[in-house]
Every structure is written in structure tokens, then in C-alpha cells.
Amino acid sequence: MENRVEELRKRLGMNQEDFAKALKVSRQTVSSIETGKYNPSLELAFTISDFFGKQIEDIFIHERSCKDEKR
Image: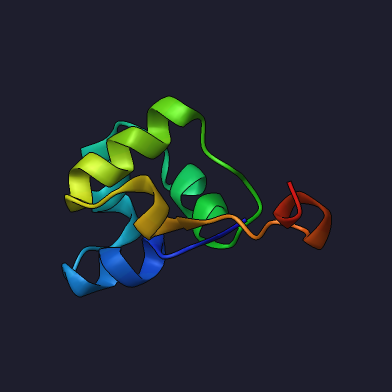
């Protein structure tokens, strides 16, 4: 799943460490989310969306397969 976390964080002039502290997670968690190696829990995704004041869908981009689009 792709996301815009790094872009939005940098727009606020925040480094990963400060962003992680604001979310109450580790810097490694932030790094893993930004690189797409880790998909956050639904609770953390809501926390991130609240932090940025955006909808989850505006931050996390889920690409559906062609098979899913036919449903």
C-alpha cells in the first residue's frame, strides 16, 4: 500500500523522531510506514489521519486489482 505520510510530515517541517513522538510510536515504525514496509493498524491510520486533518483515503492509497474493480 502506498502512502503520503512522508510528504505530509515534511510539509510540516517535522523529522521522523518528532512525528513518532507525536504519534506515540517508534521512529522505526514511522520509517517502515513511509517506505511501505509496514501497514499501520486501523487505529494508527486514524491517528495519523487525525494528526494531518485528512481522510485516511487521502493519506493511504490502496490499489485495487482489476478483479476487485469488477465487483
